[in-house]
Length: 170
Image 1: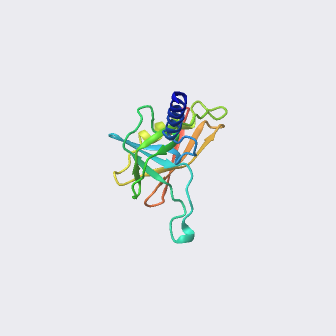
Image 2: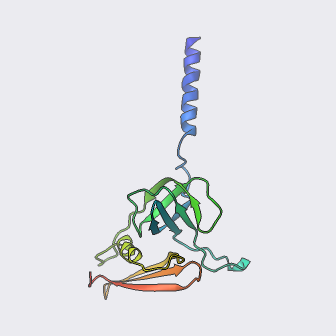
Image 3: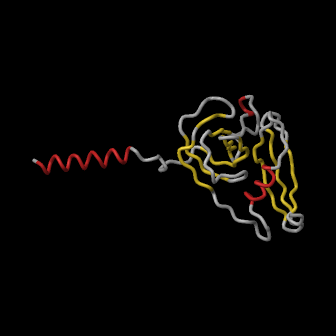
């Protein structure tokens, strides 16, 4: 009898521990770039836009979420996978991070810096107005002249801001 009770207890314990997993067996809720860092908040913009123009929306809609519990090791330009809790309906949305992974990037052939390093330099020095929010629209490296071309999209106006970053001057 004692064995049955002990076995049942162990079985219940194992089942309850499986129920407490963080849910990393599912795809991330958001994959994107750290585009803004504010006091105790971090803004992640999805890496690829969605075309909502068929329904009367914008042609480049970036999912954006402010997180109120930013990990200290995230920086401007980091590309991340994010799993989060419930989300508040607003734009940008708000939530808290449950788990995250930084997607490691490598420098393009001949480049001095990686994409995330260049994005960090560009985004952290961006002189934007408080009402402006940018998503990373495109990054390109030109190995011949050692320059990066960073295209950012302002989410409210859909205007593209292109910044050229020279590795020769840094």
